Image (tube, rainbow, N blue to C red; front, side, top):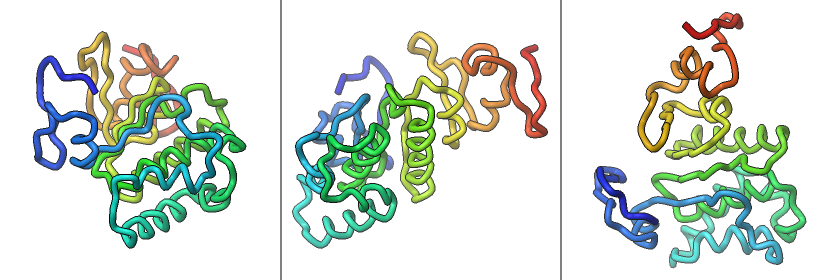
Length: 198
């Protein structure tokens, strides 16, 4: 939503740096907001359907509906339930499903675990992995560094607006600097032992 001060943003090789939100959506970027953004007095079906507001092909809408119901079983199970009656984790899955209705190339997830208890957070990250494994590109911004890296292929740590550490997520999890600064302790090796920061 903000114009970058420097650099460029490309989606599938196309420069979208100066695009507004509607143009970003047409370029293939979907955004799941921080916190909860379901319409509580509407059903799950109605909430998910809003994600296809710009889609005019009924067959495409049905195809995407079938896809998100398969990807997120709770969405299918609670299809006719008012979204406000769902738990926080279930609402987040409805938001994920809604964002996928436009067949995005990239899904932007802004702090999906914010305000959720540990059990619900675990469920939400399981769904992030499901999206990734379904072939979707997910760009995740998350304060819970360990959970984010466990769900990611690549990681990038920003410190005061600058890239501090970047690389393969597994490597970052094992990096002593990450353990000391962001993960709350020593790095865990593949053998299950811990190494303190150098």
